[in-house]
Length: 116
Image 1 (tube, rainbow, N blue to C red):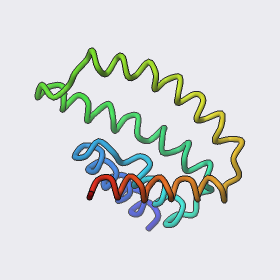
Image 2 (cartoon, rainbow, N blue to C red):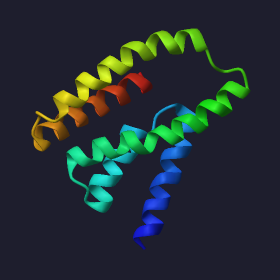
Image 3 (cartoon, rainbow, N blue to C red):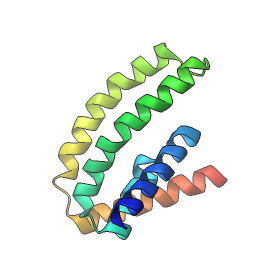
């Protein structure tokens, strides 16, 4: 049963990633925490590792259809790599309970921005 749950989480995250460009944080983290009991910090780190091959596959499909801006991607990626490093270092200093609250607030704000 656990393999089926893990596979279903992966399929949903992959579809959402390919369709909307999201999925790591929005699908994987809550699913790992609430459905399979992964610890908060480990769920965040694991989602990043999971989303890498998903993002690569989605990127290939988008690029083949011409829906990709290499110049823009490279410029933003430079900042994102630095920000990712800083964020990962900071995440390890934040208690799980606080991290969960920060994540929840971010999810609510992102959701409201999408519908308003």
